[in-house]
Length: 445
Image 1 (cartoon, helix red, strand yellow):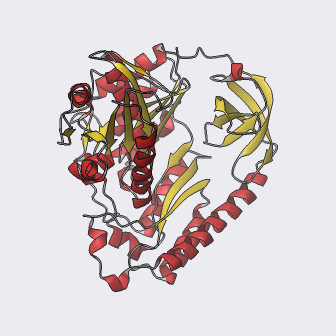
Image 2 (tube, one colour):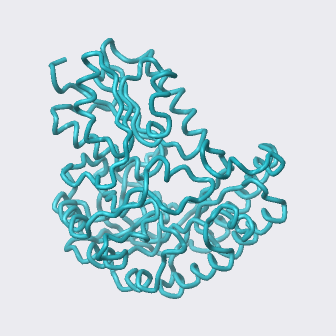
Image 3 (cartoon, rainbow, N blue to C red):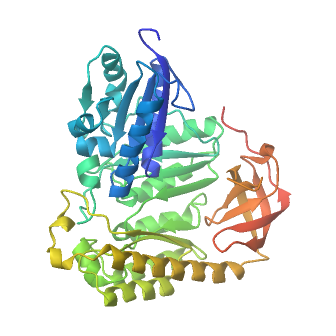
């Protein structure tokens, strides 16, 4: 290996923000002379980009670090980046002696120098928050030639009692609107025509002059943008201005991921979500009135401290009433340092009870999804071909309203828009038959 540069492998866990951060890290490292490789076995540098939002995610990373120790080549540098690195800091080096670099979400600028120091035997960390850091001068190394993740906001000020994000990503701060628009223009120039705006509570975006409504209109007006999505919003931040911008900006897709977390007002108050069951319903009603046919997906936590069977029943009835397209469901995971861990032990819900509730919730969601999707068979959708499906030799496509549709076809269709008829469903995804192909889009190089 030369004194600078070499090969780098990055493995990513967690949310879309982590995927975007990996793209930023790769952009930084490739500009410093490193070459990205697709496997860790012979890499000079191995980075694990981590999530800390649930204990299970952290345990997976600890296990993976153990695997890496047996697979890494002699002299390789192993680093941990992201939220788990921010949360544990030097403890990671104590737990895994072969880890020599630990970098939090605001420290990616330091990666090249930390790696070079590690190659000389010096272990190092960068876990300080930087309220000015948006990596504006980085050129992301994008994985996806069909859609682009663009962070517009970092950190979070909401401080929900179960959530560790404020302590791993710091306080909320937003990029300048003009910088986001310039990145969107570069994305289109690279041949990508779907953009996803990212933030911990993305619709609370405010750069001091412009709000999220302004941002939607500005990015949606970039020539060549065909689809504009965003994730994850907070129900409290859907102002009339934001909803009007969604309805009036043609590129904005008819899908909103609207985290509910619980259908019980009592539990929501203990979570410090700052809205009630009725407030959540009212937000959904406003979105559906402004965007007819909008699909709603959500996140739900079961087993939060103090959740009773009556509270859980309110979550089930909320799921029935809301008719979500999909719900991402989780058992409560206590995170060290969050207020939810300080509830009395007597209020903690046992794993057995939480698991049983989760199974009931998943069954309810899947049954409703299957019934609803069967009723959509025969309809047509415009879809964007995203990638090969994991199995069956099919291609995975996505409609504007976030339906996953599998179609037959070869890889030359990736990045193209097609009209398909929904001819079958597995319950959560569809099988589609291609009706006709729209103008092909150039693929990113």
